[in-house]
Length: 138
Image (cartoon, rainbow, N blue to C red; front, side):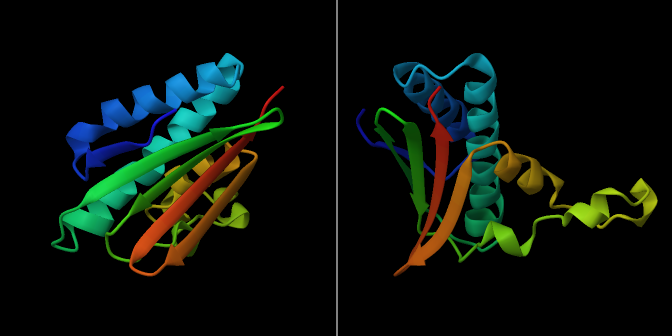
């Protein structure tokens, strides 16, 4: 599949979801795995757009690419927004055991997204954030 480049705006989320679902279909992922992958990419893309671009007063694009082989589908998403390592804001598992009133606000979507794929990696390369999602093919 070709690389997808979209504006770093919330209006781009539907195009990103469509790209992810096309990649999932090309990799013959089952519906459950495809849905979890789409959810994970959507959560991280939304955070990039809201926190990495909008709240930081920046504009930019998101570049998505995919790699499919016999054992996995890998989606890579890169942006030039403010540095944003999702692992710094993820809810810890012990926090999930607390009553809602005692839990910190935020981070649950990141937790669910990262738990929804077989492997998730974040790295900062130069001025770019790179988020990598890997799902094993059945």
